[in-house]
Length: 334
Image (cartoon, rainbow, N blue to C red):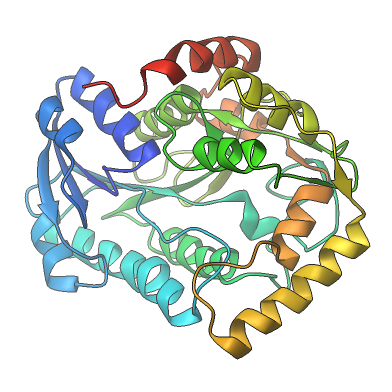
C-alpha cells in the first residue's frame, strides 16, 4: 500500500506517517519544509506548495490513497493566503487524485466549519450542527469550502471522507502547548467569561486512529463515503480544566484570571481593525473568533464516527495528560 500524506511534517501529519509506517505501508509526505523525523521513519519527502498543481499531481503519482492533512491554520492573515492553501490546495489534491487514479481520500477538516459565532454547541451532531452562515475568521470559512469540495468529489472513482478533529493535543505538539506555556509564564494568559464553558478535545493518538479507522472503512458506496464526521475524545470538560491540565503537564503556572466576554469581544474588534489599518505584523493578541471560541461551549456527539467506521477513543484525557507530562521534559531530544 502506497500512501501520500500532505502536511506530513506537522503534528497530526507526523503521527499519521508513524502509524502508517507501522503498518508497513510505503509513505510519501508533501510539505514545504524538510523534516529529519520523517526521514528517520523512512518517509519519502516531497517539498512543494499545495498551490502548485503540477507538484501535487506528481506527488500523487503511484499512490493508492491520500491523507490530506496540510492546511493554513491560525486566526489571522489575508483571505488570499487562506484560499490558496486551503481551497486551491484542496482542489489541486482532488484533481491529482482523479488524474492519478487514487482510490481513497481522507481529508482533515475542522469543527470550526460548524461554529456559529457565539452560539453554543452542546452535544451537536453532523445533522444538528450544520455549516455556519457566517464566520469570524478566514480559517473556518476556507476550511468549509475545502470540505465541501472533498465531499462533492466522492464517487465511483474516488471515495472521500472528511474528519473534524477537535483541538488536538499530546506529545509531539509543537504549536498549541508551547504557546500556552509561553503566555502563562509571561502572565499574559486569560480565560474569557470564566472558562467554565465545556469543550471537547482530541488526544493525538486518537486523532490519528480516527483517520486510520475511516480509511479502513472507506470505499465507493461505503457508509462513510461522502460524509463529514466530528472527532474528539468524547470527554467534554470545562475549558479552564483543559488549559490548566495541559499547563500542569508542562510544569507551567496555572491560570485563574479572566476577562468578561463583552470586553474581550470588543477588544478583538478594535485590535482586528488596528492590525488591518496599520498593517501590523503577526496576529492580534485578541480577535472576535478567539473570544467566541474561549467563551462558548463547543462539544460534539461522536456517535456517527463509531457507527460508520468504528471509531472509539483509546486514550482518555487523564492518561493523555500523564503521557504528555512524561514527554514534555524530553521534547526535542534527538
